[in-house]
Length: 599
Image (tube, rainbow, N blue to C red; front, side, top):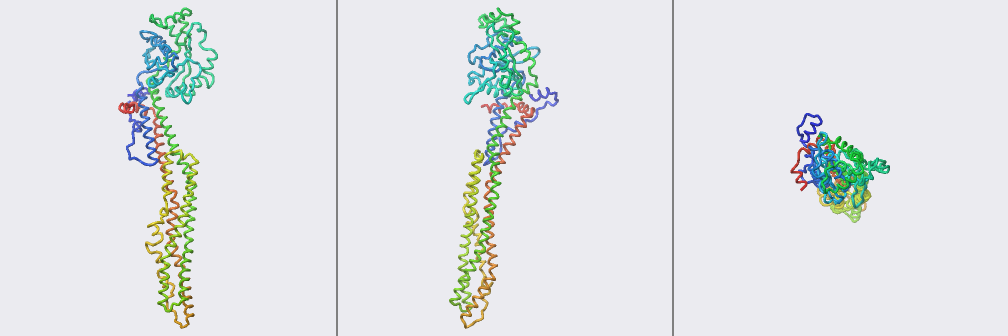
């Protein structure tokens, strides 16, 4: 219906209703409940959609797509009702009791918006009397809101040539109310309704030099302030005096009207035509007639009221995304860029530390076997069998102690590495605390979770406890035992030594053979130990570098959540720029949706 009227007004032939992408965009999610930052993003979107649907529903209920509505908006006792009454008489659309609708100056005389149908020079339109914005607005807030939503053009009526005043922290001023309530309007004029209550006030000009300055000179004038808050929608000011115009036009006041005596007083001093000319009412009536909106202009005005809540929602989404996701993710990324090389250095130190153990353990092993065997030879080992039995005994002792020695060495290296990792994470946390990252509750919760994950790493976290330790030390496969297995055969000390009855010579030959053999087999022992340590080194290095993974995961999740919110924000901005999309949304009606949202 609305799109058809709008399309026809633009000369388009296609009058069929298009699907409403905005309607689809505002539907609730039907997906599995996510977790972490994405869950927060979904909550933000759900709440934004709910509020936007409600805002659009409230506005849509008040929109009038058929008749032009021209609203008179302003402070209580500014003379809106008097001005409308005079215009109705001028347009030949007055009621049976002229003057009865004019306020008596008491607060909130007009509590509901009243539309007065007028017809003039072939145009049909409604003049809407809006409740005063300076009274008890709690009683009339909905009436004011609905009236300005229904209006297609607005005249802000004021009895003061000075600009509207702003408020403070505790109270909205007139300027803030105009910004809030009238900014969505297509066209807004200011009407300075000068109070003229005595015929002696009637002169050659309605305004003096000071009033001209207050109305139009400089950015702090009425025009300046109105243009500041309304932008291109502000059309300028008009000066008039409603009461003299009304008194000049009305000729059938009821006998008991409170205006009878005042009219007589004015007309006793002035001619009716002169009084009407002084009031400037007729030129104002022509301004209204020239600006009665067409069908297209009505549609444009209504679209203009639906766009701001969409753009306001997009702006709020941009702020939420920036505060909750964008800024923390950027801050974290900057810190992680510094963390990566620090962890690499820690991993390198850990690797070097473990691999340095190869020489230490190899030399220790050879030395202890050599010393024990030398002692045994000195005590006397006669014959190959005795020598072999003693050697096997010593090697068995070394096998038993070797795993424990290596375990302690690796564990000490792992603990130093873990401590270094925790120290750089503490610096990361401190640096982020100095930024804006922790202003985001989402980031704070995610970061705490990552700290718990890293803080819970004991030695097992580095893969050095339980089954992982067994694998690293080669116990599960007998790796360390195999290092010393067959050592006797490898060094050849059990090959028959030529027997000699000279005991000293015999011992010397045994020692020489032992030393030679141990020297020959040392590279193999070194290589075997190195191979076993490399398994632990690889695991320790990987876990040191993996310290960053929980934080990389946070950054990724934050950016994913940010994209989710900003994707919806972009879609809203695009929808707000497309008049036919807005019209399609309005055309769909959404009566059930509107009822549900307002309920």
